Image 1: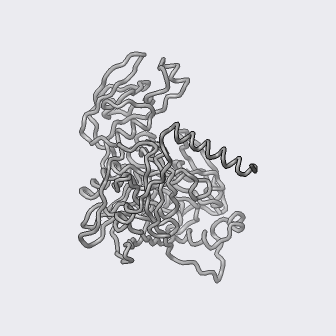
Image 2: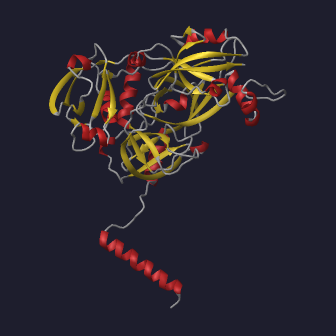
Image 3: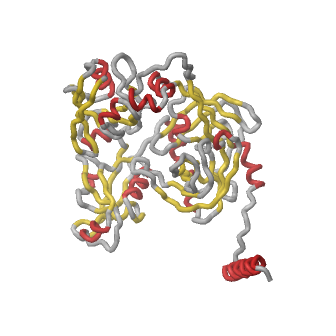
Length: 461
């Protein structure tokens, strides 16, 4: 017997042993009928965005020149489109034309249209969007649209097959399948969404599309991937549909999203802190600061308390607590199990409405009006941020590579409190200072970075 057949025989024997021991055969899931049923309710989202002068200059300049000369060199006889096109996915949630998609798909859009599976193109209105959950609601005129059924994301099990439909790289109505890899994944503390992690192949253009269970129910909105290349690398994340529908219903009814507010700063418990607080394992959310005249202070919470449970749900880490607070309605009473001085006690807090923490729809740019372009995007601090940071200023949301701000070492997240010895309590005040900055000089920028004040020298050219 040749080596080839020996190897094949061994392989077959191993496979038979695996199947006989587990009793489970690896049969692929057939989603073909489901795809035919739900596809008419999935649409492609077409977005047009007007480019600012700074963005136009950045696009027309080769990277090599930008490194040496910044963003202000204009190359003659080079035509750059004034608008930029992008695309994503969405799906109908009502028969009268409401759709769900991602905030990042339609943010800063000057025009939004949708393309149906019968190739009809319809203008869409942005009803509202929420950056913190990355959920947006669109509306088109008409009736009797094929709305999808929503399922219960909480009943998903790790290992359960799921299906995504969207427009990756513009290839409309592409279906991809996989399994649920994990639940309640949190990508950042600012965006405390308990994402569904899957190994479904998602790529640019899938954003905003639905994630289905085997019953054809929507269990999530495909939102992001974890990638070092910009493409799929096996880790995809979807917003649970219950979180998305809660946001969507508020937007449709009131035009905004209201969240409950406790008034604390929190920190995770690590191994050392668990030992210091005599916990059997790292668990709970450590309160590092309690703001004055807030539900937390009125309930008796103190810095150094560890919140172990919230409304009967065990808290393993800080993001668990943030998720639960976000799902609580204002004016509801929340009960907490707290450890203080190695003893457990129960506290109750009547939560209020959180200060408006939604940034302006359009970030203000330093190239508006006269004055030098510093190469950064800005927005005002929200009332909640102002209260927690105890400063008035303007937060940097983006720094363009090769710009003056980047050369000075300014970073996204820095809060500018003074520029050239002038206080900058808001973006309008900061832009006024920028317009009058002296050229060919170094000016001082007072910032707060990670809660620590600092001064940066900015060379204005």
